[in-house]
Picture 1 (cartoon, rainbow, N blue to C red):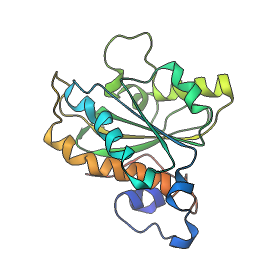
Picture 2 (tube, rainbow, N blue to C red):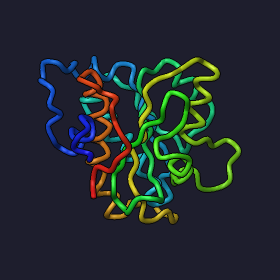
Picture 3 (cartoon, one colour):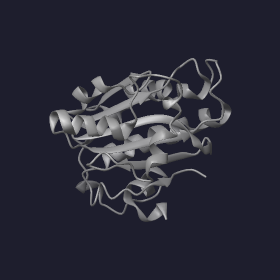
Picture 4 (cartoon, rainbow, N blue to C red):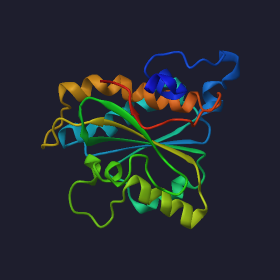
Length: 205
């Protein structure tokens, strides 16, 4: 159950069960964290990453983190990942119901929890491109080139539409606060007990 996991419970608004004094301050917790939000701002719900990057850049909980936005994941991001101790990727997917927010972890070897389907059903992978890479491939590349092995999470929301347009669907727009809170919870609680015990799961029905 999601409530059994400290990070999932915290992101869903529950008590993580750890004393506040045991947690680092926002800047300390966020130091070394890299958040990569990606997607096309002119393709409906694929603009989730752009909107989230704007919100996270102004969020004091991410004060010590690096937040960047890209149209898609590309191999050159491996150089950014090499110095990070925590990487969070934010995108929409075409698997979950519209507006459903989910978390999964990419393990140290570059494999994603949930198998290959989880890696290929990101909306950001749609369309022909020899430069796009999936999250697991990007992490494997960073490990091969730089020996990087940060903890890596993917925070995602189900898309309703990916048609041309500059507006999010109501379901995905309503999910923005949950996506932002999920990212902030991973960053701020990683200094607590078993901070990376996260299992694949959904945060919102």
